Length: 97
Image (cartoon, rainbow, N blue to C red; front, side, top):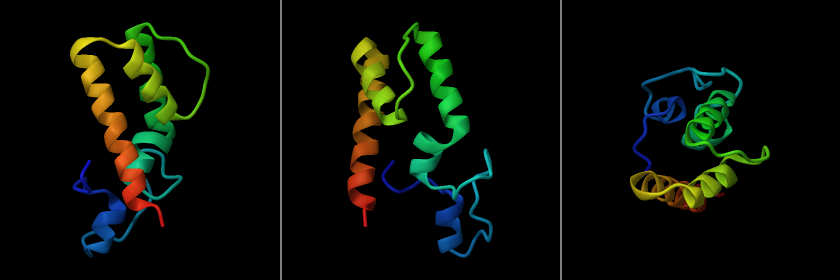
């Protein structure tokens, strides 16, 4: 994610946007972490991906789900999930205050 995604929070910091709430759910500020891991819409998308892959699991955090999907997937899908999990972990480390 490299801090390049132009979320509404980031656009507001650059004075390009005034509203910072998530366009998808409207409940929280639109940050990268929110868009990929906390947004209700993102959670629904993850459930669809689980169903598409035929993976069933109990409801937990989306980052935990990413990890489980990465372990159960193979080939290109596995590499894509592993990359996403690593990027989200790095983002968390870089953005913790």
